[in-house]
Length: 167
Image 1 (cartoon, one colour):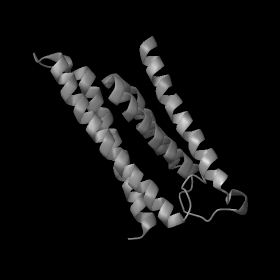
Image 2 (cartoon, rainbow, N blue to C red):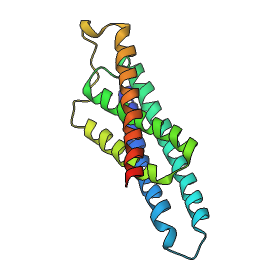
Image 3 (cartoon, rainbow, N blue to C red):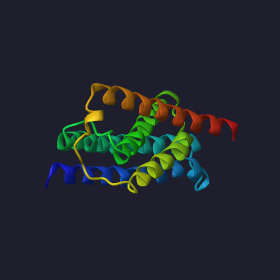
Image 4 (tube, one colour):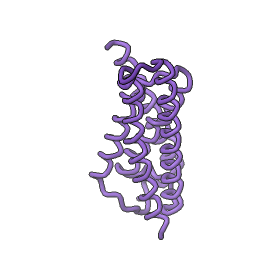
């Protein structure tokens, strides 16, 4: 198995875990009325499971990022496929940080499906690893693209939180 194939497999596993995590967070906020249980205990239990799954999916996606970097010998943010999957990864990372602070399960219901859609959308772009063109062979590629995508991901999660507040 090549590094490129391993990176693709890791991304697929992360994608599947994110889909399951979305379902878990949905159960955490909608399943409270299913039985005569304590609603807070139900939300805490399913929220903890959802957070754990999101963290595991994030670690798989970090594995994808690292193996793709090794296979391509450059940071995997140089084409639309790589940049879009990195954006999805950073959305999940921003969600994990904000969830640790506020512990709101509803944020996972709004944020994780968007990250899943973003990662799925990346599949419409060519995913083969190609060498960098001379114009991109600069350390500014790493600085500019990664900080821009991290900022966009944090703003996307902040938008979801604001939308939840308004609703």
